[in-house]
Amino acid sequence: MADSLAATVVAAVGDRGFTAYEGLPKPEHERLRAAILELAEAALTAGGADLERWRGAVAEHLQDAGHRLRFYDGVSSHRLDRDLYFEMQLGKAEERFREAGAVHLELGTWTAWPTERTEGLRVQDGLAEVIRLDFEPTYDLDVVADARRLPFRDGSLDRISADSVIEHVPHPHQVLAECFRVLRPGGVLKIITPFAFNLHGYPDDYLRYTPSWYQQMCAEVGFETVVTDVEATRGLYYTLHNSAKSVVVDDQQDGADGLRTLHLLVIELLGALVPLDNGFHGGARHWFTAVQCFAIRGGGYQGPLRERRPDVPFTERCLDLLAVPGTDEPLTLRGDRLFAAYGSPRFPIVDGIPRFTQPLRTRTGGLLRSLKRRF
Image 1 (cartoon, one colour):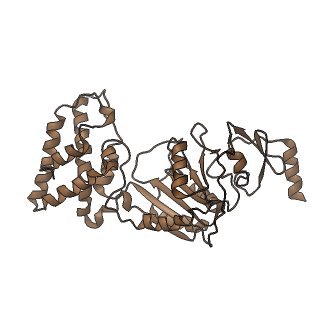
Image 2: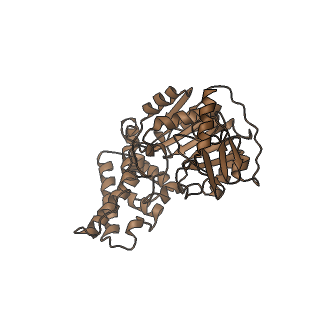
Image 3: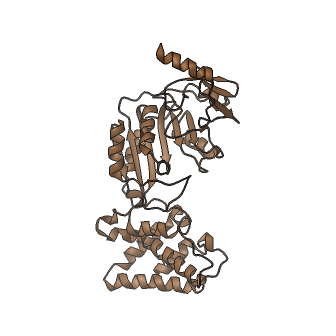
């Protein structure tokens, strides 16, 4: 084990640093890093703390590849010392879908779901389909649609995952209700949303949610089982470390070089102290960066035993799952258009991807819908 906290940090992160400051002056950084971490050790030993124990905890924390890679940049990895109850219960809930011909919907893709990652999830979890949905058509995806009006039949999906999505929706209750509608009995919805986190527009950032909000809202829309978790991202130092990486010194400020050094010292001190969150009452669990939730629709699960048909274009092989957004109304495929049963609305297919945010309406379709309602 390294003989100082500073040596432990340097051994873990090497000569890496905050990407935004690469190549810019950071005067006295290395000397001051050693000094501030030595000061942290002095504070611990002054109170009679077991220094070797805490050094060991910091070393273990930084040995994890995820923590090393994200020490300076990006959202911090989940804590290694977290309670695994949430993961264990979610794993049990999702085991039912393995080799059952199940369909997974990834709600919101941004740039995080290229084809290779999608196929990796499908193979890893033994799924028939992994469908990528986003409102923005420029990303790698399968369906362009609004999460508040999903273009799927009632009870047609087995799993839905939404990672950092519903904070960007001004009316999240609609998303939860739609997810409940399209899940089959026994289906699972998994959601992760930031809590103590900077505003990040896509195209805007509206809300933050507590575990209690998820418990109540998921139950209100009909989910039978709801499990929430903040353990993976809890702790005062953990949360502050994550927040410290979300700002950059303004180069035009007087003394910008010194401000960069100070900022780096704060990031490094907080990053090293994350294991010391366990020294606070309750592990400082009232501070957390994100909330996880999974909700299960009631009823006995029966897998669809859907066959995987990778050589068939998405719209063709998943036509039986698709519907007029927000409804159970089936669609038919004709050329590069999807048609509702009575002609309107129509939805274009662009480069093989159906776009449900761009309905093409016809007068005759509207008349037929009116007649349908009347008779």
